[in-house]
Image (tube, helix red, strand yellow):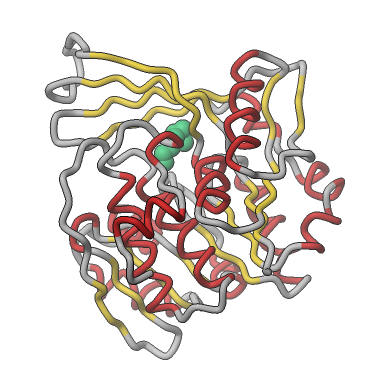
Length: 304
Ligand code: RIB
């Protein structure tokens, strides 16, 4: 079975429910809150394991209770956490997630220990990079480290999947040719391409000119658009469902994509599987607690 390595962030999320998102200068009362395990990297590793793939995570937490809780959550799901660094000089990352009545969220990340995941740490863990088949990264650790990880992974001929979230201010063009699959949402695509949100075709053309390989644009309830290197594009319809909280839906999608590709599925099969997994994640609150297991997914979608 192919092995997946996720390199990225771990956060303790404070998930706060509100009727409507507060505007600048406004104070609103919450309807409830919870401390829940999250972080884009950790969510993706958790989802890979929940969906049945062998997965290891590289990242860093503090020597604190939140760090313990995050590692416990990942280990419980089956993620190999043996190389996650524990640092006494920094606190575990956190995220404040405000979720409105429609299930939309606004997220502020306090980077904490994610900010010390550096090139040296990647060098120290080259064995893990060598031993895996697919490397998955996102952008909540320092960009220098992301660049270095992608370069090292590609030099080792690994399949590189990049979820460019949060949307970066800076993403060097040299990376596009090293990434096998880039998975932006519409906002991230617009920011990467430097174009207005909504002009998806224009964004895809801009990134393909920079040397991008396959790009999968997630479209929320509308599903996802697959664009391959040869310029072929196909929309895979989303799955109608009742949305409670969209937190980690994108992470679940990325992970499911990696899992299905690791099992030898085609890109189309992988996106269909990812749509299904993400559609279940949005029906439940929180990040990791919302991620479906393979058997839950099979029960809901017997054809998979
Ligand atoms: O994608 C959702 C995640 O973004 C949350 O779990 C939060 O920690 C932030 O990283």
